[in-house]
Image 1: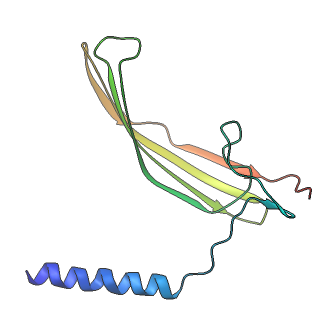
Image 2: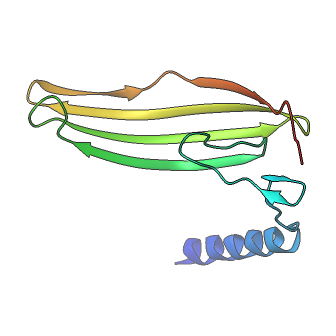
Length: 120
C-alpha cells in the first residue's frame, strides 16, 4: 500500500507542476484572421509541435476471409523553426489470418515539413 500512496503523490505533484507551468494554447492554423483546419486531403496544413500517443486501430475482413489486423501507432513532430518541422512515426502491427499470425514493428517513418507560403 505504501508504494501506491507514494506513486499517487508523485503523480499529483507532476500534474500540479504541469498545470502551473502551462502556457496558453493557441491554434497553429491561422493565416491573418482566417483559421485553416485539418481536412481529409491536407491532414495538417501548418507546422507545429505534435505528439500522437498510441493510436489503436483494429480491422477485420479484407481480401482474405478471417483476416484481422491490430495496429498501435505513435507519431512525434517537433518544430525546428517557425516554418520547418521534423517528424518521426512508428507502429507495431499484428496480422492474423487462416494461414497464421505475423507481428512486429513497421519501418520507422522520418519526415520534414516546410511551410512555404502564409498568405493572409
